[in-house]
Length: 158
Image 1: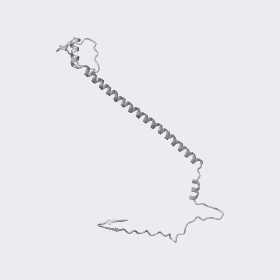
Image 2: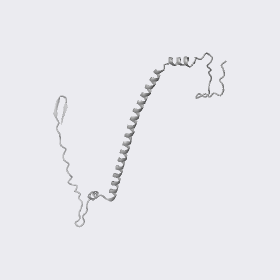
Image 3: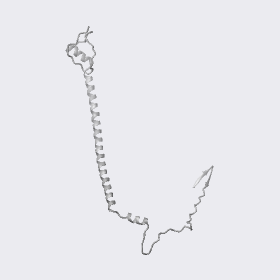
């Protein structure tokens, strides 16, 4: 390992940690075994038991695997439904854009077909319509702005 101190580079000397020695005053602990009775430490008994599957563990394991498989199938079906709906939405959006473009084209065609001057000439010459004169238009206030229902003749203006 190197480090820079100022403008010179020096090699760092590493020291090893002293090895820990076991105290000689502490006796080593070993399980006592009797010749006729074999006793295992608790950890060895637990390790031996953990190597075998018991019936409850197998049931819980198989149930959890079954639940996982069912949840995966449900998730995949829902994901396919969502992707199908997204494709439908996209195709409908394209269809809406086409319809809006067609409506704009028809609107432009209708506006270019009839001008206001042509409508005025048809109304005055062919249909005999005339502009209203001063005093022919009567204004009145209505309580309901949505519609007007005429029950009798409109009174003449004074």
